[in-house]
Amino acid sequence: MTDPGQQPLDESMDNMSPELQAYYANSRRRLWNVIFILFGNWGSNVALGRNGEHWPKHTWLLPLVASPLVYAFGLAGTLIFNLLMLGVIAAGLFRFARAFAPAETAACAAIAFVFGSAIVSQNAYDFSADVLLLAFFSQGLAALVEKNGEKAGVLFALAVVMRPTTLM
Image 1: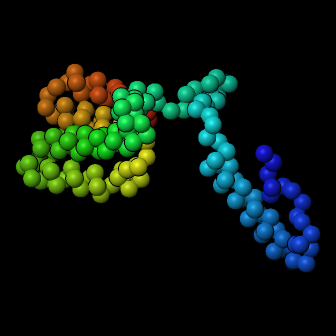
Image 2: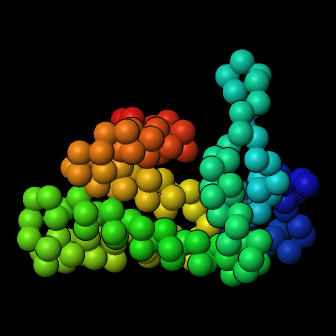
Image 3: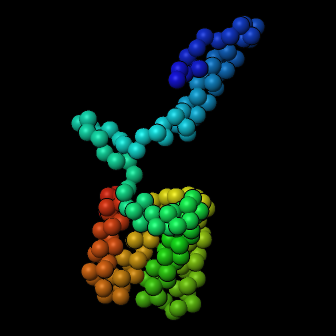
C-alpha cells in the first residue's frame, strides 16, 4: 500500500493557493494514517522487541477462558463472556466493599463503579482483556479481605500474567 498523501497533487488543484494545496495534502496524509492505524495494522498479533525478538501482543488467557462460551454460542459467546465478566467484577467489588461498609452501601458502590466507569461504556461490546483482568483483580481483592490468601495470590498472579503493568 502506498501513501496517497505522498503522491503528486492532481491537476484539479492547480488553481488553488499553495496554502490550500498544502492543507489538502496534509489532510489526505492524516486521513491515510488514521485508516492505516485502524485497518492496516490489525493482521499481526506479534510485537517486535527491542533486541529483535518477537513477543505476543495479546494475552493467551482471554481466549483460553472464553473458548467454552465461544464454542457453544459462536460469536455471541464473546458478548455473553463479556457480560458474565461484568457480573463477576460487580460481585468481587461487592464482596470487597462489604468488608468495609453495610451490604446496601457496598452494593451501590459496586454497581456505581461498574456502570459509572468506562468499563461498560468502552468495553461492553468489546472482546477485551481489560474486562477479564479486572474480574481477576476484583475477585482477588475479595479473596484478600475474606482472608483467603492462596486464592487471592492466584487471582492477582493471573492479572499480572495478563498484563505485567498491573503491578504498577
